[in-house]
Length: 100
Length: 100
DNA sequence: CCCCCAATATCGGATAACCAATATTAAAGG
DNA sequence: CCTTTAATATTGGTTATCCGATATTGGGGG
Image (tube, rainbow over all chains, first blue to last red; front, side, top):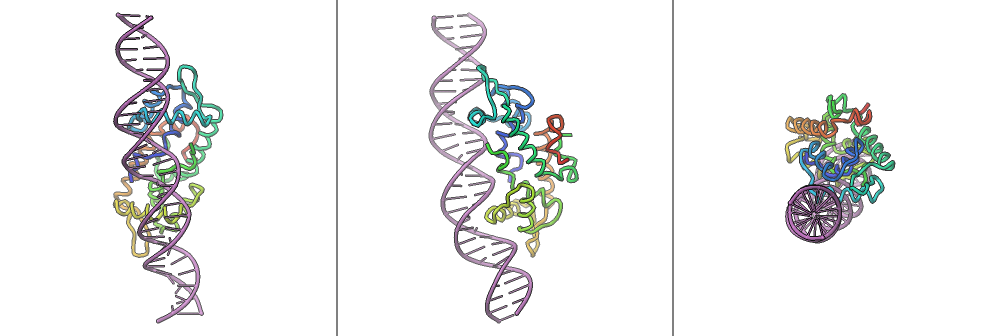
């Protein structure tokens, strides 16, 4: 088990980051590096963005600046609810996972 | 993207659940069902437990009741710190992901 | 206008998570 | 002790995530 090398987060994290502000691919990669500790490679980030765009969760303008669509916002909120339920006892367990 | 079918959580979630109390495989599966919405199959849960035991993160007694080892506790805390950093802005983003 | 560099895109492959199906073990009751 | 039923274990295969390497695009300076 490698808890801090967790897979399956990438798309979700991208949505999370885009909720704060519009970003291009490089900026997103940098933001993910800050959060995860490792910078996703181009071969990771761009296919992910393409997939998200194909799913209608993000859009991008002519300058390749990506932003959350309404559908993406709903998806993100659904995912947050999912996390919320999954770790409903986060507070009593630690003070953790709550960004405080 | 399938945010609510996220992979790579299983081992982590098992540790999380075992932090609360000792459990056998079936109980763990039930607890995961409550949290994730889907019950992991035997072919999922037992290999995961075996791996965790092999890594020294959990132990089990003669009755196959699993518990967190000290190493497992440290691992879990490390993972929690990881999450904490990853979603450091959880509060400002929503009120979410904090089990409240 | 052309070159150059950074950003973006694509592709193949490696890895690992997970499940379905099946086999084995253990427990409880008659 | 035997049977039956639930719990545990194993195996093989499917799928998806991610990365490395490599192409392509686009924008700014000369």
